[in-house]
Amino acid sequence: MAESDGFKDLLYSRGVIKKGHFLRLSGRHADYYIQCARLFEDADTGRRVGEALAALCGEWGAQLVLSAAVGGILPGYETARALNLPHLYCEKRDGVLTLRRDFVIPEGSRVLLVEDEVYTGQSIMEMREIVRALGARVAGTVCIVDKSMGQAPVPPPFAALHAIPVRSFQPASCPLCGAGETLVNQ
Image 1: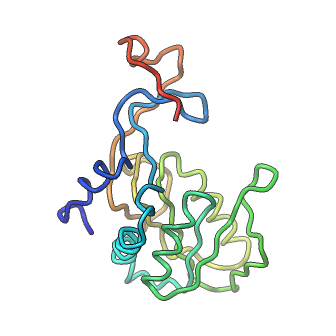
Image 2 (image 1 turned 120 degrees about the vertical axis):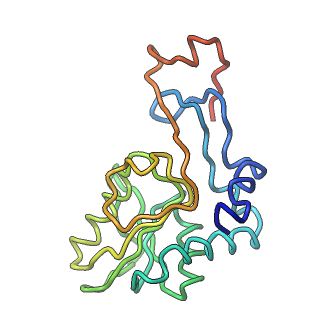
Image 3 (image 1 turned 45 degrees about the vertical axis):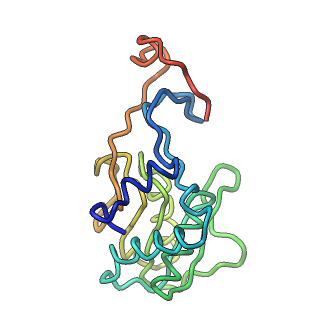
């Protein structure tokens, strides 16, 4: 499921990508809304997304997959399943991304990071720090949608199934507001 196989069309037809004027959780306004969870509403599409992500990184030598709750859990699981690797996930506790639930990353292991979408790269950098602190190594990072167009500070190897230039604005300087576009709270 690559771009040439109609992946972009799938993203739009499933309502994963919407163009407009959207209020982000940060309070900023954006010109696109991305909701990758829509790809996992049916098992077959979710499986195909995991296989496509696995195809991007199959040669990287990963020994386990790590993703971040909540958005990265399903793509992480499906990618791990396609690669026949264990899947762990981390989650926020007191505002910090941590490994919980008795999950263990063995020292020296090669860990594949999987996210649904990447914009600032913050969760990827937090997961990298978890992996490093446990004495393991990051094999690489894959995501469904790269909203940064390769500009997020994610060290290589890094691959995405689709890239789209999402712009965000402070409310006071939002050109979408200036154009009178209705703000949608997603």
